[in-house]
Image (spheres, rainbow, N blue to C red):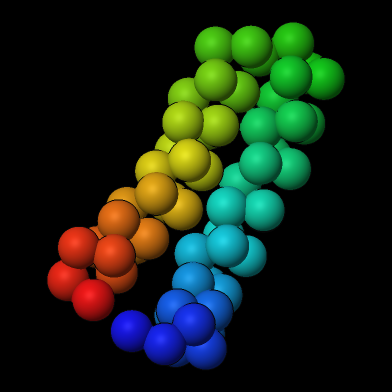
Length: 58
């Protein structure tokens, strides 16, 4: 798969992950460490899952 296609496809998950990470940082500042860790894990999955599928099927 071409690099351009990968960049276009990964744009939406990257934007969602950035928003989710900023929410996780806010949770850390608010003292909700456990919730922040869960949000950071969700953000990582949001990036890793589509990227892995692109590489395995592409």
